[in-house]
Amino acid sequence: MRLFIAFELNPVVRRALVDACTPFHPLAQNCTWYKADKLHVTIAFLGDAAPSFLKHLTHAIDIVCGQVEPIPCRVAGFGFYGSRRYPSVLWAGVEPAAVIETLHDRLWHALGKLGYEKPSAPFDPHITLARCESRTRNAALLEALDAAPTDDFVQWTAAGVTLFESRLSPRGAVYCTLHRAVFGRV
Image 1 (cartoon, rainbow, N blue to C red):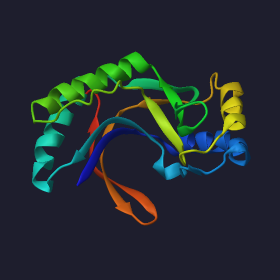
Image 2: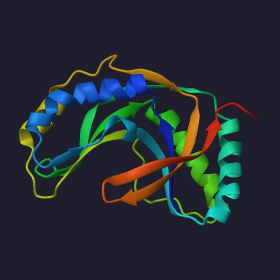
Image 3: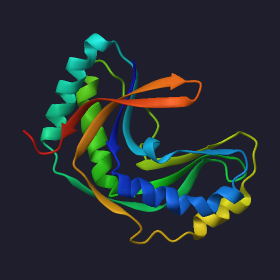
Image 4: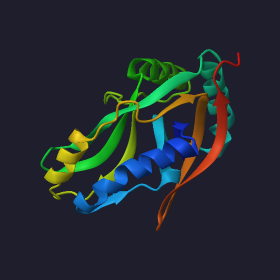
């Protein structure tokens, strides 16, 4: 099972993000835009795990989340990974980054006790919007993303996290909910 922990986004937030990205589509060369049902904020990518290990994972996640208050979140600008010449991923930033990073660190501390190793790459809370093929230039798209207003764009409260299984298929990944952990339930 290929697993990750994420904030789910409600339909209003997903629709607002899809609508905000629609004007960018004509500028995007060789990019695959995520559908609304795929939009989420990954907090921790765990990779492969045996089904028999789920009870240990869910218990650890529940303990961490029980000690966290709901987190008021907002979309905070657009950006990209890769180079400015060849962007590979387009994303929307999420704030409050410091609070979400603390949750990320607490989860990885608990997961470390189960044998998981925290990735060395820095954590940057975001919502992946699209993936671009390598060696595709998207200068006009990046300029449009930079210029797009996102002040008071979309806000929501993260009330917990979800443990998802990502099943790969020829039509793309299918996300299956395995467990929801609610914040503040000690």
